[in-house]
Amino acid sequence: MVRTYERKTSRGCMPDVIRRAIDHYHTTEDGVKKTAALFDVPKTTLRRQLLKFKNLSAPQREKNVAGLPLGYTRHRQVFTDEQELALVKYLKDACDIYFGLCPIEVRVLAYQCAKQFDIPMPQSWSEKERAGADWFSGFMKRHKDCISIRTPEATSIGRATAFNRANIDDFFQKLGTVIDRYKFEAKDIWNVDETGVVTVQKPRKAVEPTGAKLVGSLVSSESGLHVHVLMSSTRKELFVL
Image (cartoon, rainbow, N blue to C red):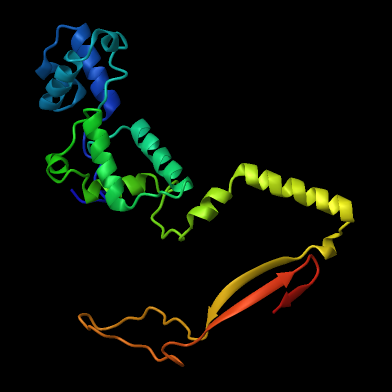
């Protein structure tokens, strides 16, 4: 099956017609053939739905045929919606502590979860010990509003451990004490930041011949210079050093 399936027809019996036919079959003495002709539905379809209703548990039968699943259903999904949401939460939590998982690691994690909780999974998962690429593609599409594939920024351990609530609260508490002690105003507080600029522009993506091993784009220089720019600013002024 293709990764992105779109239904092209509306063939099939209406669910309400099937439910009324099943109810008529159980409340009258009419057989399957007569009931199918009365409601203008294929007898094979009616017989299949009657067998499905027969296999329901007693509490489900008490609800009558209103809760009987009918019509087309989506492709079999390995994890339930609740299980996938738990997996999304785990991935977001791992990203928050700077240990985000790459696509291969996510597929391995999905296989380990299915194996740990005895969830039926495709045979290829067991052979490769990881979920398939099709599952990962569908998983990302189902949760595209929550997660996406991005290139993380390299973060040192010192920076990651220093940026926490306790240190931030301590910083602003000391900052407030200094401002109150020396009566600093907004114009007296400066913000300084540093950045690096390369003198050679980065080539843009271009349409090139397929199979070419080397493609080029003219620039002013190949290596260029790395220039450090130090910028400082206050509430009203901006200086570049």
